[in-house]
Amino acid sequence: MISKTLLTSPADQFSFGALSASPASTPIGGVVVIQEIFGLTDHIADMCGVFAEAGYAVLAPGLFDRVEPGFLADMSPEGVQKGLAAVKATSWDQVASDVQAAIDALPKPVYVTGFCWGGTVSWLAAARCAGVNAVSCFYGRLITDLLEEKPKAPVMLHYGARDASIPMESVERVRAAAPDSPLYLYDAGHGFCRAGSHDYDAVARELAVSRTLDWFARWR
Image (cartoon, rainbow, N blue to C red):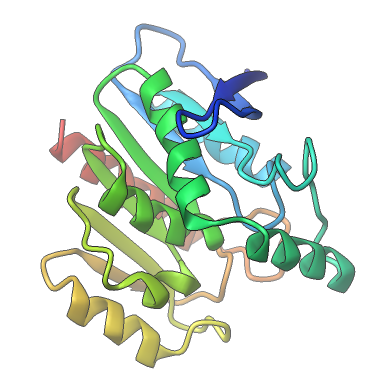
């Protein structure tokens, strides 16, 4: 069951919303699920449920709550522009602090995963946040902007081979910057984990999530 809670950023004591999900029994650890540019959508709630069913306590922080409390955007052209504007209004320093709040609120060990913009934030969390055992990044387009941020936690990466928004040149730059990180290509487009999107691919999603769960289990 998905519920809502509040977290407090350690940097500025700002309180912001988060989705929360709990497993049926004692958690085996915690997972932070990082949103796309669209906010805490049904897709993010769905992914919280996936990790809760796998035995983890889960938090998905609302990283655009400073822009607009309860921020949500749809996938229309206007919604995309709203999401992109929120990205521009949100600093990496703020993001790292807000993610740290979610990490600190979860039972240990803690893992981080995210989708699209959240895939990039997951990379950032591996580099800047304390208490992260491992990270799984899904199609993070902006990771190439953060290659100087060296992960301190083990990182796994997932990309769609037919993702028009992330050129293979960018994928190879990430691979070269993180040669010890498993990097997987799927016969899919961007957002292949998001049910209901035109790029949704159930087979790719199931495989990528399975690999992520195995990755997390490896780093307990």
